[in-house]
Image 1 (cartoon, one colour):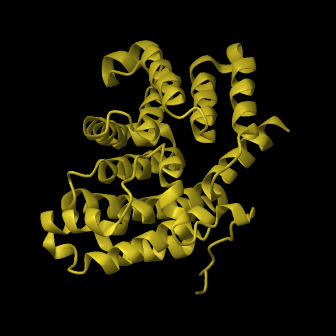
Image 2 (cartoon, rainbow, N blue to C red):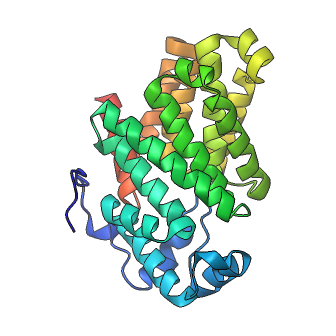
Length: 280
């Protein structure tokens, strides 16, 4: 399949190939951060029962969805994205994760990146309508809008009311899945970015955001997923947004920790490579 300009994953590794039943065995570790349910036939059948419009053949959909996730984990983001989109709301989680991680690390053009996040936001909105009971329907919306906010500048995002949408989706995620580490990290970063942009008092009064909440959520995510590079990266990013150079040693320590963790898939390899670059 042609990649239509999708830059290839630069760190291929046989260890990221979860062929056959390797995927199910590694699933819990691979999805410790987002608590995605393993898409076996039983899980898909339950989702189809709630929304029969999404398809009929649970076994066939489960096979396709598992293949999409295998593509994501090995770094074939374009294939994962296309497979996910083809499965509509059932594949939105993998499509948004693949499209978003690829855009974050492998799309250099700012306009193309912004367009991608806008597209992913629409996929997420449709998934929430179709599968409102799935925590990741809400989390992927927060992820897509959060990345869009960073792409267009936090100031513009605040003016457009995007911050409120991110928070609303993260709260919905954590109500459905209280131990969702990626949502916990994202909520910490939400607080940190607003405090960093508008200052402590305005952040508290206007957005209910605070430095204390930021650090609380970021530290909680580290407890939930101590082996996740992104939890350490965002902890460092959060400290920098809140304290600037005052805690640069702690920021460097957090990124050093992220860089030193053994990646389990393509996303973690990209996260760790980013952390290494910051320390170079």
